[in-house]
Length: 138
Image (cartoon, rainbow, N blue to C red):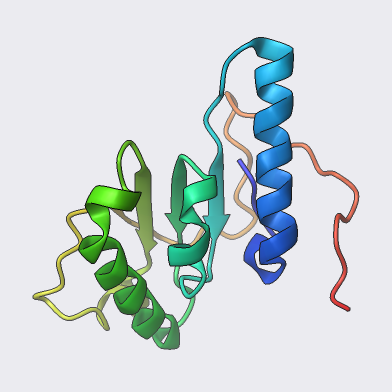
């Protein structure tokens, strides 16, 4: 899993990192593990989804809904080429969900209704590691 800050602020570096992770996985383990991206930027998904087995997208504002709808339409149009064995998860907070038109086809996504939890603890069965800052805005 690759998560924030926001990985898609550095799309070329992110794609290189994803390819490097895949190479190391194959060399070290003889197989290809699953690689997921957590992001809040839908604009870049159509160009970079190919590097990942799945995406978890969380829009943070009503303005993000337009980007979600645009990316969703693209993914629906090219689902046969892009979406085979991909996992798409969409986390929606109530104040964002109300901005998505009722007739929107979200069939590619597993939609999860979210509630904000302040200082949310890491689940007992998961482990998160912080790495040094990989990239800086130039």
